[in-house]
Length: 169
Image 1 (cartoon, rainbow, N blue to C red):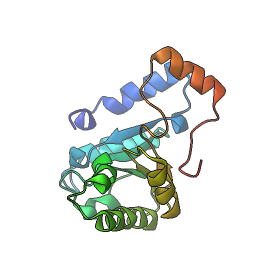
Image 2 (image 1 turned 45 degrees about the horizontal axis):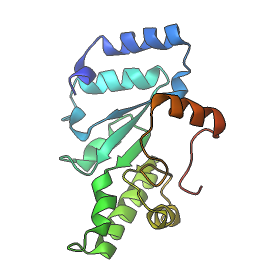
Image 3 (image 1 turned 45 degrees about the vertical axis):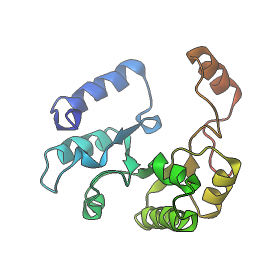
Image 4 (image 1 turned 135 degrees about the vertical axis):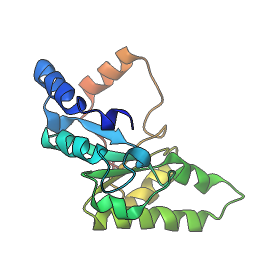
């Protein structure tokens, strides 16, 4: 939240992109729901500046903060990352699983209606990945797709795998 209010962030990131040669379209930064607290928030200028560089933004852990859904229309984001707790709670015997899936499905539908892509966090089973695919979730991440590994293993996997794995894979 503090970085989003820094006037230097856009310039700093622009220099980093120039120095590294990274295509800005390959960089997605994640912001929390609390990054912007209103339509006049100075952080909005910074976020628009980042998008102006060609970087994409996603709201991370969506649904766990103090979501004011009206702000979604003002944020220059291209995606939502549904908090892992939504998927994790689906396996809590004390909670109604079908209601949980309806909430996740509603979040996916709402995001798509706004033209946003959706990533579900915390996906640990093939059954969850398949159900997310069926409801139209664009991407998923979690232990179902891979456990944490050492940096050398990440480099090896990147070299061997196609870029990104949509939920359908």
